Image (cartoon, rainbow, N blue to C red):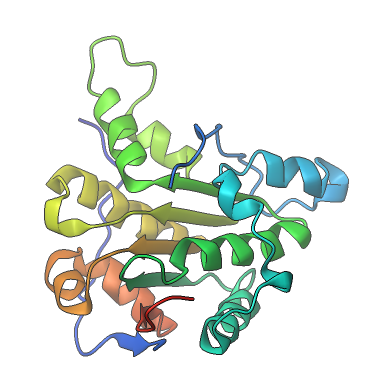
Length: 222
């Protein structure tokens, strides 16, 4: 099976910062990741084709009494996007607002005129596996290059405890290459810090460490 070139590096140390669905079928990610919307697509079109779950896109954050720490983290992460490229791992139990936070960050990026794309880790794995089939129309490397297009990529349900090794390796190579190309990536996981530090490929942890981006959602709900 073809794969993206291997990433390099070792993670280490205490990487954690404590911050105390049902998606539609993804469309193909746009390749002009940082192109202003005014020169190509409207912001509305970019957002419509982003692949984010409709229920999260429809959620009106402005009219909800949300956890103040949640709102603070959302502002902080959004402020660091569309810069030199950052890697975030938002993790914690369900109903703490991880996907909603990623959606709001992506909305900000899209409003700035850059492309965003959402998919689940399971969907990514299915795409990777399909490239090994006799009738495959693309290689894993070709699929990986498509995911280098969006300015912000969000991968949901990254749970390494029961992930296939080749899927994790593909993700590691992708995160590393996106970092090298100054692109932003947000990974969402339901697992705890210890599991992520022991099971995620070290290159992912290393990239997130550069912007102190391993954030645990420690509240009961947002």
